[in-house]
Image (cartoon, rainbow, N blue to C red; front, side):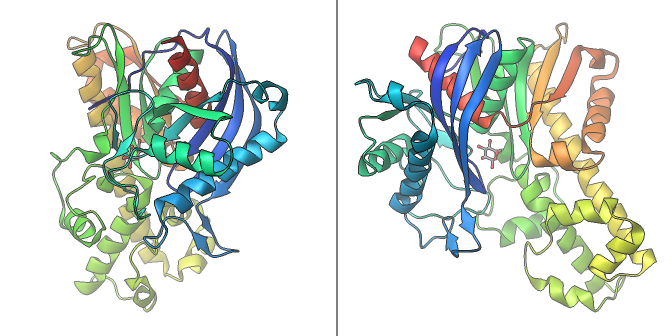
Length: 393
Ligand code: BGC
């Protein structure tokens, strides 16, 4: 439960800010203009994958160090500046404020700090754990010659970025969640101990652990890079559902329920992605059978297992959201809006409906008080709003 050091925006934050977003697979930077009245515009965006199949560069590997990773981020910022209409503004002597969305568990004692507690989502870059990512970014900006031009002022989690972007446009938003490669939720705490007034709290709920486990969950966890960590996320997020599916099908095969030649190719962990699962569900029977080279009856089993995994994922998320809502409002008397982003929620057929159904089941007659809405792509805008809020502090 990490304080974000930020309150909800009031929709009138104004100005032009640099924004950087570092998630599990891409890094992106942009110039964002906040216009007030809940409106904003992205002026220029540069996006680069952390793994480049053409050059073979893999920034998530343990052989890559913190300097290389953060130099890569500073280069992206440089590219944005080269092509943005900011040039006249940044020639002034005041460094340009930058908001940084960093989607990993970190500890902070002030808004500009982020001490990485541990990597997850299978990232292994060396020399970052235990370090302040704000300092690493400042040092890389200095090496890039941008030390006096750009000043990272706010570091936020991606759930907080989604919260800020959604709440900037709709003041009823009081919870935000990511259901994508990883999973996490933040919420507005009305009275945070040690702070005046309300505060956005990053729950890092992906690391919740009091959840019943199956044999497959245990196997996945034991074989992962981070046994014992992110146990909640490992049961439900996009990074892991394909691997859970693979563990289940291999077990069926070992027990003699299924017998396919192609299962020989499934020995590689993480060889099935949640995108593959979505294809299993949605592709025409013939296409999907051709894809995985499986007979009709088995395709039905695959679909059933996939549906169960999605259903369990949506119900676990719903349970944790209900926990947060009842913490905010024990008798559930006020309306709440949950903003959600993430590839699983947005892209997986039927996922959003499963989540709504589970929330309705759990909240029963009070369910009409809770609205869930998609709030896609708020990482960069949220970083800009955080930089604007920091300026007002
Ligand atoms: C990280 C969180 C992040 C979530 C969604 C989790 O793996 O620990 O910080 O918010 O993924 O990206």
